[in-house]
Image 1 (tube, rainbow, N blue to C red):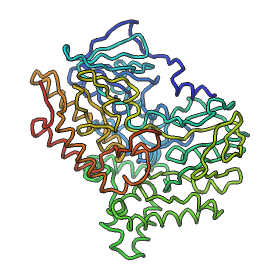
Image 2: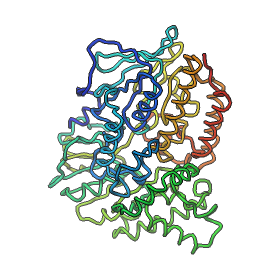
Image 3: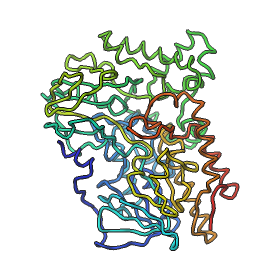
Image 4: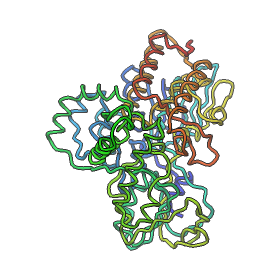
Length: 552
C-alpha cells in the first residue's frame, strides 16, 4: 500500500516547520484551525484588532485544499480573477493570473504570496493536527490539544477546516492488501507520479475524477475507469488570459464584485430567463449552446427554474446528453456516460476533454452501478468475479464533506456535550457560523451556510468579516462569551431545511447530503437560499443586537 494512503489513515509522522517548546501551553486570544484561505484571512483580521492569534495547520504549508489536492489536472472551476481575495485592492491589482481557470500550482503560489505579503507565517504552526478542543466553563476558555506536545488555550476557537478537506477512503475489501501504489486525489504527493507503461484503475467520476482521468490517460498503458454514477460535465474552454480583459477587470473590480454579491452564487452569471419552459425550443437550444460554448458553471444559471421544475430540468439534461453522444464514438459508452439523475442535483463538473478521453484505445469504462466492486485483490480490482489487473489505483472518491474535518476533532462544549454526538443525526448550526452549546466557537463556511454552492473565497470573506466584527463588538463592551440560543438554532435549521426541500438538489444522492459516506445522515448541508438572502439575514442578526445570541 502507498505511503499516501498510510498518511490518510493517520499512521505517518508529519514534520512542523515552526514549533514551540515541548510540553508548553500557549495562552492566546484566538486559535484558528486551518491555514487555507479562510484561516489566513481570519488571522489577518483578528491580528488587526490587536488580538494574539495562533493558526494550527496539519499540512506543512498554507493553501488548505489546494495544498493537498495536487493531482494532475487539478484546477478550480471558478474563474481565477474572481477566485481571489477582495479585501485588499493592492493585492487585487498586483497579482497576475495567467489562465481563465487557475491550476492548483498557481492557486498555491497565490496562497503563499498572500501569506508572505501579510507576514502571516509567524503565527502559524505547521505539521500540527488538532486532536481535541474542550471548553472550560469556569475559566471561559478553550483548551486545544494537538498531535505534538504543544497545547494551547484561547478565548475563541475558530474552525477554518474547510468544506472539502477530509478525504473519503472507500471501505472496499482488500484495499490494504493491494501490492501496487494507491493514491487519493485529496492527498496527492508533492512529487511527480509516473503512469507511463502502467495499467491504472481510477475509482470515482466526480469533480476530481473528471479532471485527473484525461491527464492519466495521456500516459498510462491502460486506464480502467470504474464509474458508479455518471455525472454532468460541461466544458471549461480554458485559455490564457489576455492583457486587455485583465486590465478591464482590474479597473472595474469594485463594480464587478458588487454585482457578483447580488447573484445567487456570488459569481457573475447572467440568467437566460425565469423559465426554460416559457421560451421556444429554438430559443432554449440557442441559450444552452451559447453557454456550452462559453464554458464553465454559467450553464447552471441558464434558467431560474432548472432546480425547481423537473420539466425545465429535463431540457438541460437532454441537451447535455446529446452533447455526450456527439463527443463519444461508441454509442454504448456514450449511454453509460449519460447521467440518469436530475441535472445539477449533484455538483456540476467542469473539465477539458473529459468525454473525448473515452475515444482513446487505452481507456476502458467499467460500469459498477449495478454490479459493484467485489474487492481489491493484491493485483487489481475485481468486479462480478472478473479481475482487472493494474499497477496503480487512484481513489477519486471525494470527501466527507462539510462535517468530516470537524467531527474528526474531539470537540467538547458546555456540560461535556460532544459536537460529534450533537451532530450524530446531521449538523445543526445557527447561520452556519456557530452551534448551540459551544461558546466562542465559530465555523467558517460551516454547514448551514451557502459555502459550496457559491464562489468560495467571497463566501469565506463574508464569514470572516462577520466573525471579526462580532469579536470587535464584544471587545468594545468588555464581553467575554457568546453562544447561540437553542431557539435561534432551531429556527435557522427549520428555515434552511424548508428551502432545501423545495429544491430538486435535495432529491438525489450526493455529497451535499452526505450520501457518499456510508452511515452518514442524509441532510442537505449547505444553505440553499443563495448569497443575497443569506447575507441579508446575517446583517439583520447584527442590526438587531446580535439576535439569537446570548452574550455575557
